[in-house]
Length: 430
Image 1 (cartoon, rainbow, N blue to C red):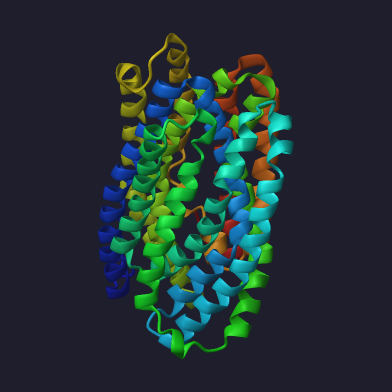
Image 2 (cartoon, rainbow, N blue to C red; image 1 turned 180 degrees about the vertical axis):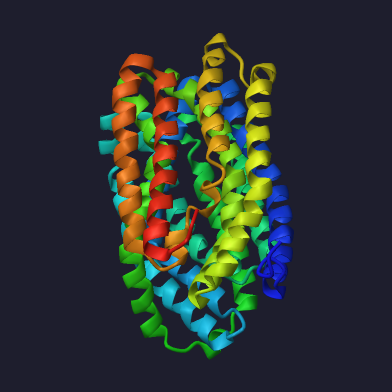
């Protein structure tokens, strides 16, 4: 082990990362349970078509929510992580982020509400229009919550961050139970986003309000300008990231019916639960990457990546194999109906690709944390192009299996391009 590996700064970062990862993995268990339970309950009690509508609404919701947040959250996270102890600076950065977000979120929410009929016509699914209208208030609060969570993340309050992430999904599940008890129709289930995000906003407002010295805020106007410039260069990448995650479901909706989309959605959402392990690592690495990049500490950055990979790669490879092997045995507990048996192969392809690329995926926000938002937007644009092309070629021939293969190809393209850009722009070897 080199002297760099044993440096006090790196050891301290390692301890924070271990603690943060532990808490966020525990949070992920809650997230996973809630996510699986939600899809299972919708499939069991409302049918595959309702599950397909719900996930198509969720795809539009997430895409619009990235536009509503405007990429400002990435700028805010980096600003807080660079000097979390500078209370006037942090307060200024937070206020400077919230003010433009409120205006932007209101405008995007209105556009989301108004576009429901058009999206429903494109997808030939009338229930999508009702779902989008019901989810619209939740989208507004989601954008605000994105900023508030960025503050918690930037301060490396990872225990609190984990709790709030878990709370979001518990609230979504609670929202479903409320709607189910009220005998709502399947098209009304998207109200869960409004219930969950509205409640979470109240909790996060109290959390951040206690951590930020509002009266000490300085340079608010300047911070708003900084955030808006960064956001304008990164918002496209944020939207493309979420679009990329739902391209398979949306493109299936163009070629196949709601029932087929529902079957694939079960596999895709369970694979998304597996991918959340990657997101946990990203959330913990991001403030550290931002801090090391701001200081130009490339040696520590390389040492951190190398040490992390020693356990990330074998862990994810093993988890992917176990998950794929156990899926057929657990499927009867998750969904009723013979049609859901076809979801196994797409699931195996999706988790297999995540496991195979785990050496690079946890560092997927590196360009953003190193303040290269425009390059990150270019990266995501290229990946989305690959994803659309692969799905367009494979879905007509292979159906839901083709959607999984197209998504796996997009994952591989992302990692390859990230590796090239990190080396050329930052001198970082991934």
